[in-house]
Length: 280
Ligand SMILES: Nc1ncnc2c1ncn2[C@@H]1O[C@H](COP(=O)(O)OP(=O)(O)O)[C@@H](O)[C@H]1O
Ligand SMILES: Cc1ncc(C[n+]2csc(CCOP(=O)(O)OP(=O)(O)O)c2C)c(N)n1
Ligand SMILES: [Mg+2]
Image: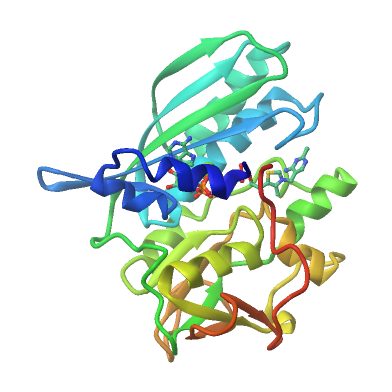
């Protein structure tokens, strides 16, 4: 079973309406007058970061990837639960947590600690919606423009060269997400690769995403075709009605068209390559 087959099997379980059929980045829980946004992501040694990585960076990346899912829903972080492993240099993990909690003004709610090797860390992030209805993956319509808040490929370059902060210290686009949430028809973060994430948005929305490679902002020095499929970039991908002028820096990379032979076209063709990263 691969990741999508497993999630499909989970859909046969009793699901809360806020789970949105496990087809979105977060769950949405309306309680009283508030709408909570909930997400959980794990990172593991050897899968998401190289063995030997400074635990400071592991803590940062763990929290950043979770806050990125809140950003995609325009949510404001309320607090975090952290599932930690007692690794060598665990004090550096605490310092990394301190750095990102301070940077994004998010307090810790609790968590759990175990000892296991190789290490796998988990994080549950809880946010408060700043805009309702919360933007979803499935609201894009044919005719919408498709946009991204920044370049792809910087994390891939960072992974391959060991240079730069994009791979280990991604910056969740929380303020951008809040500024966009009231205007977009669909929004999600780009974690698994732009082409795969765009195809998921298109599929959920019953459209085809039509992307022009030359319009995609790519980090200097990165091969464009690899950059749009590698992932780990954490920019926001959003759809908005034609003519929309984004309130934050963003590049229009294409548009949504009526559903065609595939959920994604690159330069008018169905790409003959893997669209992104999938766990097997
Ligand atoms: N083990 C699991 N149990 C319950 N739901 C899961 C599990 N794994 C993934 N999901 C759900 O499947 C959907 C897709 O997950 P994922 O691709 O990891 O989202 P994201 O890329 O935004 O982190 C989400 O709704 C997520 O909550
Ligand atoms: C050591 C290492 N090898 C390969 C990669 C590439 N990689 C691993 S997971 C991933 C995508 C994001 O991870 P996932 O767990 O799918 O996050 P989610 O979509 O659930 O937010 C990428 C690009 C990496 N980041 N680090
Ligand atoms: Mg996930």
